[in-house]
Length: 270
Image (tube, rainbow, N blue to C red; front, side, top):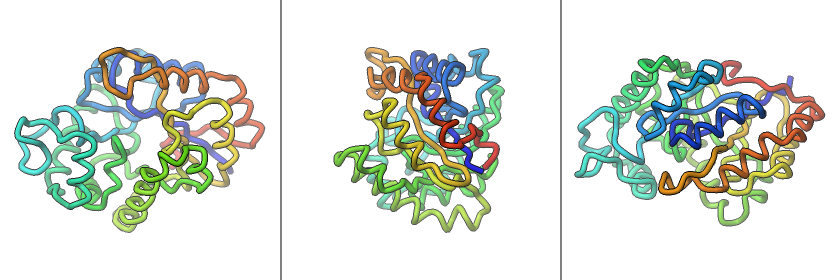
């Protein structure tokens, strides 16, 4: 059977992003979302009536804003905030984070999610930092269903993303391969293939249909970032989010899913 998860990342980023994700789930083809809990839009997301109908995983954030737990010796800077995307990646790759602190912060984020009435369906990481083996080591015993996103993108995905995205996608692949034995030994599961990690900024109906062509037997996950822009909000909340939303609402996508023998599914099926 050929099943398809279409997961919207960054629910909770801000209210316009939330609105776009809920719209993409209600009117489009989004099946699941990943929730940020330490961001300005968290309360707006969890109090939205549509939240009960949208399965959500934890979008673990250890790179931006303030942590839920702490204080930490390795995970945060002197001001008590995370180090930011680039520096967090550098420190993670150098093995500078204590896995015990990763575990404490991840459990704090899970607990906040559950207190808000949202039971996580899976785990993935903001900016894919959960793929770094030393970060993964702190997550293996996390109290969530043992479903995790690994990024093994089809080679054609690099072509669609453009050459500027290739280095990032290659890093995600390398880290997925390096951490996979850890996840596997701890009993975690993941879809047979993940698509879309290298497609940020290039999502429109044509590229989505090309992604669908790469979905084979088993379960495929397509990663998307729909929303509406918000001036002065997170740098990622740009007009590209609305272009992506429009693509997910395009009737050709649902038709294309059926024409390729794909069935929309959810993370709970992994």
